[in-house]
Length: 202
Image (tube, rainbow, N blue to C red; front, side):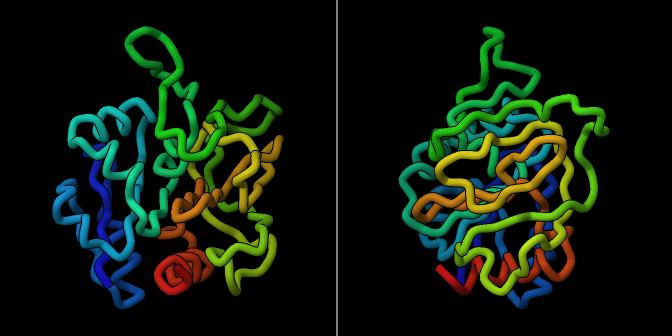
């Protein structure tokens, strides 16, 4: 099983490597598309800003590779958000416009509305999921660890929903592309089960 973690230059990837290691798998960090063509699984983490992640995708010429891959791909946190059509995350692009993302899932990433709850949304929260193989064996309303202020709107490809003042997509799935807003590598047994499902169910 060849697992590649896509390096866009904007994330600390070691925690994801260690999460797979705990499951008995070696995950390799790379931005080399020639090497990653041999992947069985691809993971796209991201922290920081959507603008920085998309700049990294451009810099390392990853755009076409990601869009054209037929291998199962899991985006984590920002790696999920950039699968949307666009993001209104600040900073915006140099023209002051929303950030164009990968447009794998027709949805928009917006700031979580001010409902009196603290931002960023940081800590444990529940996920209400559909009957999707990524959540096989994971109970409804299982707790996962979140850390974000922007979120993808609920839409056609939402497979997990979380409430934080308002509902948002905490997991998405379209064909071979999947994404989770939470951090499975920091989510104890539920997170390990989800990563195991990603390896074994696709």
